[in-house]
Amino acid sequence: MPVLQKSTFKGGVHVPDMKALSSGEAIVTLPAPERVFISVQQHIGKPAAPVVAVGDHVKKGQLIAAQDGFISANIYSSVSGDVEAIKPIVTNAGKQTHIVIKNDFTDEETLLSPIDENDGDAIAKRIGEAGLVGMGGAGFPTFVKVTPKDPIDILLINAAECEPYLTCDHRVLLERTEEFVAGARLAAKALKGAKIYVGIEDNKPDAIEKLSTYDDINVVPLRKKYPQGGEKQLIFAVTGRKVGVGKLPATTGVCVLNVQTARAVYRAVVERRPLYQRVLTVTGKGIVSPKNLEVLNGTPFSEILAFCGGMTDNARKAVAGGPMMGRVLSSINGYAKKTDSGLLILAEGEANELEPSACINCSRCAKACPMFLMPMYMDLYTLEGKYDRANDYGVMNCIECGACAYVCPAKRDLVGSIQYCKKKLREMSAQGGK
Ligand code: SF4
Ligand code: SF4
Image (cartoon, rainbow, N blue to C red; front, side, top):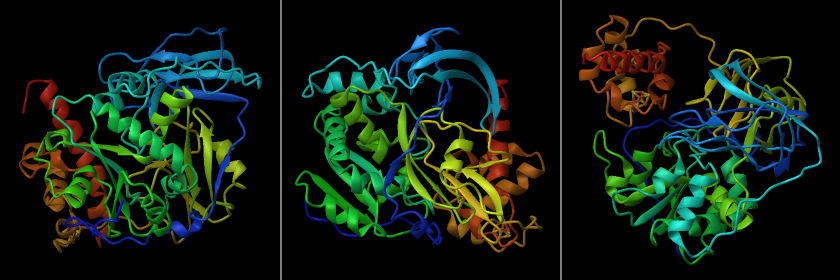
C-alpha cells in the first residue's frame, strides 16, 4: 500500500533517540535459564490464579495461572520442568506471587488446540486464551481490546517505538515481518474486517519500506517526537480522530495494538503457542554489548545482563523499559515479563543525577505536555496535600509520559508527584470522598 503523508500531534518533546546503540543488532535468542520466576501479575487488572502446585511437572506452553475476572490474563510456563515454589517475591515491581520452575531442558511442549483462522470470533477467543496483553508496556488484556462494544473500523498498529533507546519492535518489523503481518491480519479479522494502519516514526525507514510492499497495510510515517506512541497522540496523528477526556480509543472506532502483540496473535493462532516469550532490547552506554534478545518469560534480569557482557564500570542507573516511562530499578532483582520492552543501563553522564530544585515558573512543562495539562500546578498542589485542586487541573488525564519532567530545568519529579496524587485520589474515591 502507498506510504501515507507524514503526521504528528500537538505538544511533546524532541529527545535524542539513542537507538543507534542497538538498532543494528539482529535478534538473538537468549538460552533458556536454569530457573524461571514467573509473576502472576503481568497485566493490568487482577493477578492470575495459580493452577499448578509445588512438585507438579509442567510442559512449555502449559497453563500455570488462570485469568481471574474480566480484566486479567492467563499465564503459561516458558520451560518444561518442575514447579519448585509458588511464593511472593519482592522485586522493583512490588511484592508479587511468582511461580518458580526448575528447567529440565527437555523442551517438552504442549500446543493450544487448532482453530479456524478465518473465524474472527474464534481468533478473539484464542487471543484471550493465549494470555495476550499489550506488549508495549501497558499490559492491558488484548481480548478486551478486540471485543469492544463500539464498532471498530481501524486496527492501528503502534509501531512508533518513540521511547528513546528501544529498538525491539523495529527489529521484529524487520526480521519477523511475515509473522507480524499475519498477526495483524488475524487481529483485523477478530475486529470484523477492520482496515490495518501502521503508525511508525520516520527514524525507521527500512521498516517503512518493507511494510509498504504489502497491499493491505497502510503505512503512516510519523515525525519523530515523544510521546508519538501514546495511544491518543497516535490515533490523532494517524486518523485525525480525537479520543475524548476519560474515553477509550474504541469510542473513535480505533483499536490500537503493539507490534509484538500483533506477532503474538500469529503465534497463538497459527503456531498455537501462548504468550511466554518476547523480544526486548538491552541497551545503554552502561552495558558492555547492547542486544535485541528473544527472552523467555521469567528469565532473571541478571542472566539477561550477563549474556550482554554485564555492566560497564561507569554504569549508574538501571531501568526496566525506556528512559521516559520505564521503572528505575534499585537493584537487578527482576524477572522478564510480557510487558518488558527493554532493560536500560545508563552510564555516568547519561543518567540524570541532579537533585530537584524549586520551580521557577518557566511553564516549559505545560508547553511540552501532549495532554495540554499544567504539570507545575499539579505538582504544587500535590506537595501541599491539596489533591482535589490537582484533580481540578486534570491530573487523572495525565498519561505519565514524562515529557514535562524531561524539559523541566529544575529537574522536578513531576511524574512521581502526579502518580502519588492519582494514588491518593483513588484511595479517597474508594473511601467515598471525592
Ligand atoms: S503532565 Fe502527564 S501527560 Fe503531561 S507531560 Fe507530564 S507526564 Fe506527560
Ligand atoms: S518546567 Fe519545571 S521549573 Fe518550569 S514551570 Fe514546570 S515545574 Fe516549574
